[in-house]
Image 1 (tube, helix red, strand yellow):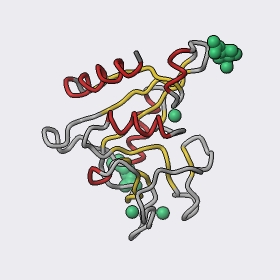
Image 2 (tube, helix red, strand yellow; image 1 turned 180 degrees about the horizontal axis):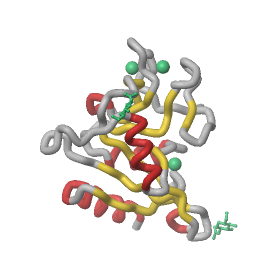
Image 3 (cartoon, protein in one colour; image 1 turned 90 degrees about the vertical axis):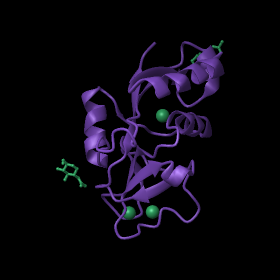
Length: 162
Ligand SMILES: *[C@@H]1O[C@H](CO)[C@@H](O)[C@H](O)[C@H]1NC(C)=O
Ligand SMILES: *[C@@H]1O[C@H](CO)[C@@H](O)[C@H](O)[C@H]1NC(C)=O
Ligand SMILES: [Ca+2]
Ligand SMILES: [Ca+2]
Ligand SMILES: [Ca+2]
């Protein structure tokens, strides 16, 4: 049932600019337990090819999320990483991790440490000065650190109480 919802959702991403989906807090099982707190993922996927100027830098992306009562996504599990990877299609997308305050000290937007990061092998490498994380760099599903001034799509996450 949850997987079906995801497949339907993927089709919706192709058709529309903005989608709102409800999912478990990074765990498929939570779909079956409505008393768990859920996250609402509010996903933005402007298509780069058709709208090349629509990407935002990391702080602009975060601001857009905050205007929606959300924040950039915090990826809590392999399941959440997999879902985000499906939703982003082949687009790179900002996620809510950065090391802007202290080099190499990666933090989520809620201030917690990034412990089990899904980094691409060899990343983060801070090449030049790279302090913000994208998921899906060059079609690889995992993360890369990138200059925070680069423009990408972004994924917001909003906690909701059900
Ligand atoms: C659903 O989650 C709540 C909160 O964690 C828990 O107390 C309850 O036992 C769960 N119910 C089932 C059927 O798993
Ligand atoms: C992101 O864009 C905003 C608005 O154009 C700009 O003020 C800010 O300096 C940019 N941030 C970075 C890191 O480039
Ligand atoms: Ca999350
Ligand atoms: Ca860095
Ligand atoms: Ca890098």
